[in-house]
Image (cartoon, rainbow, N blue to C red):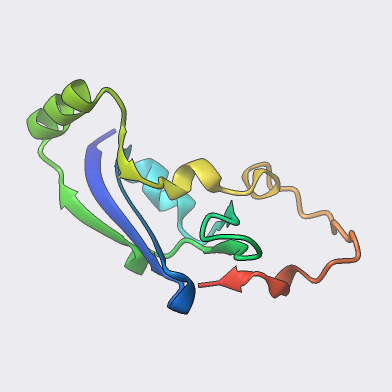
Length: 113
């Protein structure tokens, strides 16, 4: 498993943006592409930020293992700053649960970036 330092960025229009800098593996990243990420109301009340993680949302900043290990050692966490979208992948999406969760709300009413 090769670790990479990556930057994440979603432009959410006039509401703002969501970004993060974190360490992950290329395998975890590849498995996350196409999966739904749900941040909730991180940009304020009624902001409801969610969407599918795409390769264009991620920029690899470094794949140097010595640098990445030292950075994680100094910071004390694999999330360097901001949000790590891998921590916000929908549970039902993780489990492959395709059941229809009809609670009477339209899923498309949120701020999809």
